[in-house]
Amino acid sequence: MAKRTKFSKFRSLYDVIEILLDTYTHEGVVEILAESHDLELSVSTLRSYLYRYKKQSKELSVATDNASSQSEDKPDIKKQIIVDLYSNDPIQESNTDASDEPYVQPTHEELDTSMKRFEAKLKLANERNSSLVDK
Image (cartoon, rainbow, N blue to C red; front, top):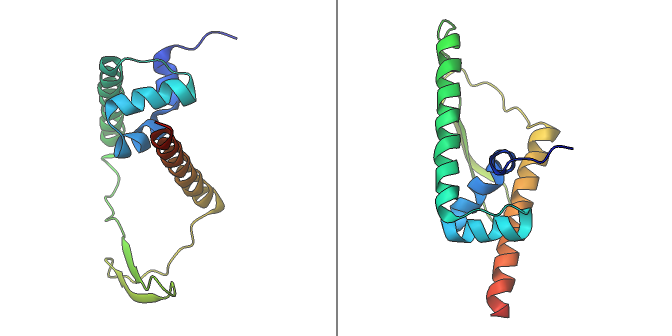
């Protein structure tokens, strides 16, 4: 099997890195990537990779947008639900779409993805907390 480049590893871990960046500094992210994901980067390399990845993603999205610009634009439908924290019962629901389309349950894949992201955040927070206690 061919050896993967650091940037290809970075690309495959980008979602995890984005989650880490919500909580940690660049220095902390570099530390976690080295310890947990076997990806050794300097802080400046991490910043360079972030810039490069976002630039490539933006170029790709612009190309995709140009290709689909002939299609009809549809407004995003957003649903807001305010929930009672004690009983988890909805208190108020409001759709920003006037057509009042019924609520669509998320798919199992969407729920699994959300759960995996939550577990990854929880694991990282626990690791971080335990490393602070050990010091």
